[in-house]
Structures are given as structure tokens and as C-alpha cells.
Length: 242
Image (cartoon, rainbow, N blue to C red; front, side, top):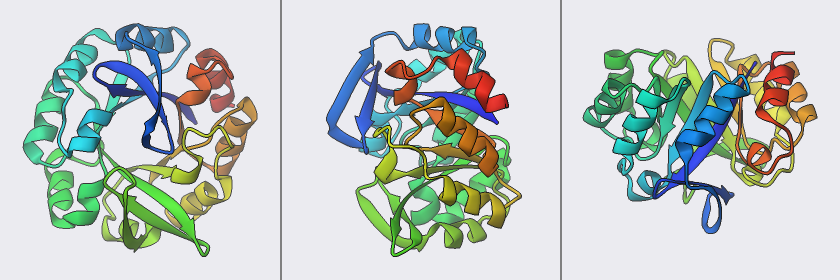
């Protein structure tokens, strides 16, 4: 399993939100390039960057920053936040980003997402599904977690058999340091073995990484635990590898 450290960006600053709530923002750094350099020094290979301005606006807002970071960082970058069109995806891939995360579009316009998979290939796109557990079912939310889709995670995944990279966030745990939803992740790995699962939400300790590795996740997205010093990137990388 890989440790993928995460940076959420608002106006070029590194922040974290609790459960996606913009009113619950903590600012950690004004220098994302330095943060990426620190991640690389700790042994990380990939970083996950989220344009929160873009996520809120429904279109990318920090393209130039992503382009600069892609050129200067030794890490492969996976980026998210408001990507809706093939032009937007093409531009950021051409700027040097490794992979683009698509979330709400796959739910609101599945045909458009299918065309993206066909054009760019499954290695260049990550399908992000943000879920809440309702009566035992993993229900997918859209548009920055503000809307429900009335679709289960399994229903969405079955619609896109070509997806290789899948990022699943348990909304109720994100930014809360309450531990990951290991049973949810284990079930996804069992039911959809063809995907490389990136587990997100709730990681607080080294033990949480051990649990996700045992559950079969291919990667763990970790933000707040690293930013608040619960463990170092180097420690996380070592435990993720097992």
C-alpha cells in the first residue's frame, strides 16, 4: 500500500476542512511547494492536491498553481477540484499532472465520464466517490458533499467497469481523526477487485494505516494526521508498505 499525503488548497494556501465544511477551515501553510518537497523527503511517491476553490465553483480555479507544482515537484501529482470537461482535464495533464480526479461528473453525466475514460485512459483518471452510510448502504454524495445522489457506491462502480483508480472518502470521518471505515474499504476490495482503491477519511494513527493495508487498500490518502504531526510521512510510508 502507498501513503499518499494530501494538500487541500484555497487561494494557494494549504488548509484542511472538517467534513468538507468551508466554515471549519484550518490554515497550515502558505507554501505548497515546500510541503511537497517535505513529502518527497519522507519517501512519498505521489501527492493528492485538491483545489477547494474549484470544487466550490464547479470548475478549476488553481490551474496555474497545479502547473507550477507539477514542474517543480519530484512527486507525481493527483489533482482534484471542479474538473468537468475534457478540455480542463487535457490542460492539466499537459501541464505535467499525473492523474486527474473526477467525482460529481461521473454521477451527473456518466456518458461524459465514459468518454473521458476512453480518451485519456484509465491510468490518467481517478474516480472519486464520497459516501455516507445510510441504513447500512454506502450512498454517494455530489457537489462537495452538499447533495445526495440516491445512488449506492456499488451501483456507480458497476456503470464504469473500465475504472482502474478509485478514491473513496467516508464523509463522516474526513478531517475528524476518528479512524478509517475499514469495513467499508474491505468490502469494496472484495466486491471490486479490479480497482486500485485509495482509502480516504479518518486516518489518525499508524495503526489505522496497518488496518487499511490489511483491508486490501492500494493507497491511503492522509491529510490532517500528517499536518498535525500525528506521525511523519516517513513513518507513514514505512507502515503503509508493511
